[in-house]
Amino acid sequence: MPLDEWVTGELDLDSGDTTDWKALALEDSGKLTIELKADKKGAKILVGVYDKHGMSIGVGSSKAGEEGVAVPVKASSGKLFVKIEHRGGSKSAYSVRATMDGGGGGGGPDL
Image 1 (spheres, rainbow, N blue to C red):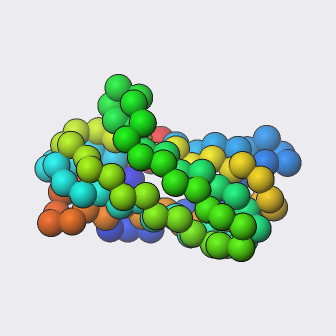
Image 2 (image 1 turned 180 degrees about the horizontal axis):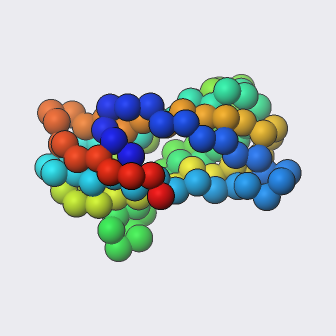
């Protein structure tokens, strides 16, 4: 998942499509923010950020009536993973973006 670019996806709890994973590679350490916007305000979506060892370094979830969530984390250089999980509500498409304060570089393919 490249930095500073919106990546789209879709989740549907009722059909069993509950989780998407994205990966990104950071060249530098710093403050990373993962932003997610869902097209359905009623969808409850959990966003988690994990380091290369699978340890959680940040989590956030959308609240009823909101269409998005932002998860700021202190990130180290290297590979990180973003888990996007549909926890309730209607089927929803979403857009997710990773931004780094002061640069950070990197990118890579979606998982």
